[in-house]
Length: 428
Image (cartoon, rainbow, N blue to C red; front, side, top):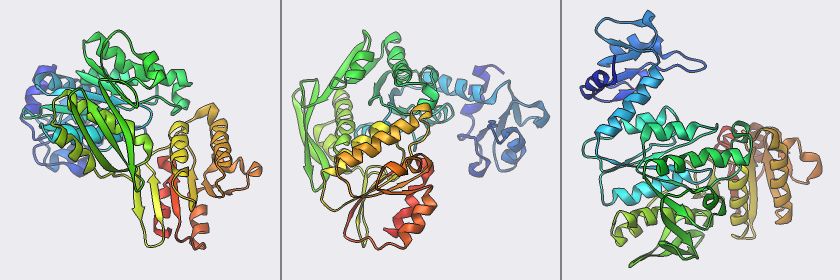
C-alpha cells in the first residue's frame, strides 16, 4: 500500500496505538516488534478491542478487511508520521541535548502553549517510535509541535530529523552520556550536531547558547537566534535565586521580565532562558512568559524539591551521566551545611565507566561531603579507596536506611533511571 492510501485510512481513524492495553474505539493499530515481543501476534486482539485497522508485517496474522500488510510496520509508522507532518501547518520545534532536553521541552511548551495551540512530546517518548507517535498527535488546530529527540547511537538524530523535518531546533548542551553507544565524547557531539546539519540543509532556524563552546564549535553557516547568561546575546539574562528556587532577570531586545521558578539548581537557568528566547522569538507577551515558567511544576522527580516530615529532599532521579552529576553535586554543595548525598550508578558509559565514577568520588572528596551513600556495582567496585558508605545495589541501601534515623537534613538523590532510587523516598 502506498503512503497516500495509508494516509487516507489514517484520517478515518480516531488515533494511532501500538499497545493493545490502551486501544480506543476507532484506533489504527501498528504491530511493532521488539527483542522480546511481536506485535503481529496482538493484531486480532487490537481489532477485537475496537481498532478500526491493524498494520502488520507478517502475513500469518492477516484478517481480511481489517489488517494492512506492509514490509516493516515501524518504517510504515515513521513514513506515515512524516506524511502527516507535511500535511499539517504546525511549525515543528525539535530539542535534543545530553542534559536538560526534557525540562527545556516542558518549559518551552509551557511558554508557547500560553499563547498558541501547542503540543509537545509526552514524557520522554523521544526515540524512533516516540517521535512518530508525537507527530501523529498534531491536528489542524495545532500551531506548534515541540518534539524531543533522544539518541544513544550515531545516526539516530539524523533519522529523527528526517522524520520530523523540524523548522526550528536547539541542542541544550553536549556531555559524556551513552558513551557505550557513541564511543566517545566526539561521537556524542557528531550525533547531536546531526540536528544542526538538518536545519542548515533545510533553511531552518537554530536557537544557540553562545556561552557553550562545544555548541559554538558544532554550529555551521546557518541562521541562528542567540541566548546567553551574563553575556550579550539576542536574548540575555542574569540568574536570581530565592529560597533555593532559581529564576531569571531577562531582556530580549525591547522586551524584559523576571520570575522565580519552582525548579532548584542553577544549571536549570539555561533551560529556562532557552524557553524565554523561543517565546520572545514567537512574540509571546512577556507577562505570559514569566507566568508560564513561574507556574511550571517539575515532574518525574526531575529537579524537584520535596519536603517530607523528616527532611528536605532534592530529587533528580530521571537520569544521570557524568556531566549532569557533576553540575548537580556542585550546585547542591552551596545550599546548606546539613548535607547528605545519595547517588546511584551512571549507566551506559562503556569503557570509561570506572574512570567516570572515580571522578565523581574525587569531586565529593574535594567538596568535603561527609555523609555519602553510594549504590550500584560501579561505585561499589571503588569502595576500598574511599571512606563513604557503599552498597552493591539499591535494595541493600534501602535495608540500611531502614535502620537509620535521618532527620532535619537536606538530602540530594541522583542516579540513572534503572537504579530506581525513588524507592528510598518513603524512608526519608
